[in-house]
Length: 62
Image 1: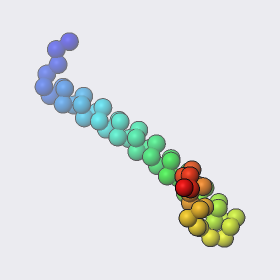
Image 2: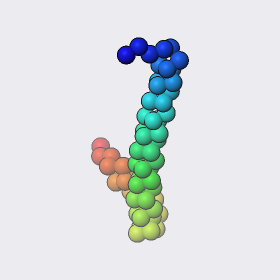
Image 3: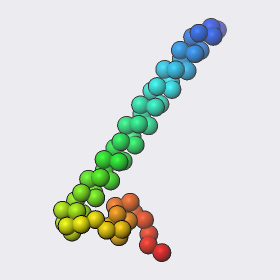
Image 4: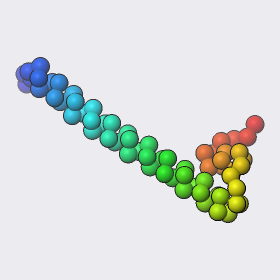
């Protein structure tokens, strides 16, 4: 399998774009879920505090 330099560049760009799209979609999903959790806490509590945000992101208080 001998690839030309141009074919290698095109394959690299296609793989890069696919990986970027996949990672971007995963990060948007994580961000959307965290926002939905925080909004649910605002509706329940009436305000966002540092403690409620730490519950959203599963951060342990020290």
